[in-house]
Image 1 (tube, rainbow over the protein chains, first blue to last red):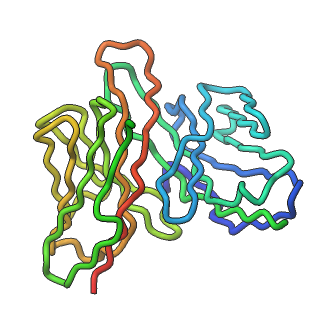
Image 2 (cartoon, rainbow over the protein chains, first blue to last red):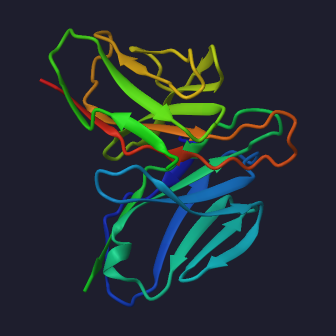
Length: 114
Length: 118
């Protein structure tokens, strides 16, 4: 079983739709949860991160973590064609004083159609 | 202008040849990482280094080697022992402050190198 599971898609939505991207994980020690956005043939860039459970909002993006269900989500409101990219979730247990190894999902390919 | 650079952007290799991918960062980060990205596989960790002259194997280290002689450089060699080397290779770095109680360390990624074996 993989540490992190993510539906690869592809996901195609019309402009203005609400997009929901999800990951599940098996390691209950994970405390830090990240979402990266990767445009085609580019390196990933950090979009949002959250610690432990709860919600975090940044503009049109909302990240949710449900540690009891080992499930994280990224919501994109009013989706734009510029949001078309692959979205990767990543997680870490990050004990203090250790270099952290991140565990990535496979990425979900999103296309927003004008 | 701080960041991570990877070179070359595209690399072609004949079977049986070793090839070295460059990764340089001027962010003064302690930790550096190499990932391989394949369609449907996501990012898989090859090697990582927390400090100069030290590195650890990741999940798929077989057929790869690294060195960390300088803080800013973490080259990856893809050897002929790697049976399926065609992939997109990503280098990343993060600040690692030993003794810090703030454990969050964002990983910053380079633009990647696409390696194709002919």
